[in-house]
Length: 409
Image (cartoon, rainbow, N blue to C red):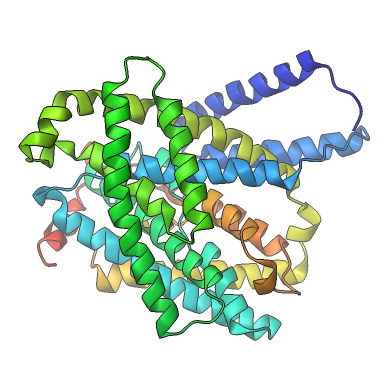
């Protein structure tokens, strides 16, 4: 790579941010996920750079680091979006089981497909299947503006639960090389420790945010969250649970009735902090998502995606994921299929977890083109659902079945 002027780097970087903002506007109007447009720009940049004999080598640690920060942002944003109250209990229950059951069935089916294709150890196939089975809330949540409130809330909760449960399951199978009762017991113990730590650390972070006189709060807290995440990973704790519960506590602080705590951290102060956190988290997520998907698009080799084996196996995986989603939503949840069934994109979390697969669990014959194919195809499927769903929220009349269904569980 030749020398590049600092000014040119600044121009390119800022142009990408402006372009991403325009893509968000275009996505709302045309109902196309902005992520797809960012991937297309990354692919185009790769093509143009090759044409002009300019090759940009993006170190994997940079992409992986962006992905991890994006992951923390996604989980924190999910916590800040989730309300826990009586009105949402049935919705939370339905979306939780939807996220969990669809995830488990998807992992089982993708594992079977990979094992029958590659004939490699089933545990290795399972570790690869988990990322491919997780719905990306980073793509789903920004794409729900045209849906009714009931559909929007269900998909936000479901995608958030799919992310979090998928990460927990992935960590369990990658940390424990031998799966037995002892490993399961240690995992449950670590989970309990993470929950206890999350309450203590959340209160500590609350105190820092509420009592500091400096205006610089968010990035201090975010840096502490990254430190907590990294330390948790070194101690084999499900540290994302800590980040999730921190977000949940901020978003549901008005439910706290302990007088001493409320005196130290009044509801009004925490409400102001919640608005601040929500705003800056959304802005930061936008920035990280922009560069992550541009870099990922740049790394996609279209030749690999268009290979016969990749298209065949990738199509079977996507079809299995789609059918499982349709069957569960229709026959178990008894809700509408349209457009919920189409909201099954794979994205940032899928890619980041692929980077995190230990060398001891890697499949020797797995073609990464399948990862690219599944990410692109599931995003296109969601785009189709968004394009075909032309009713405005106030025009939707089929919600009655969905709302009635909430009372059945």
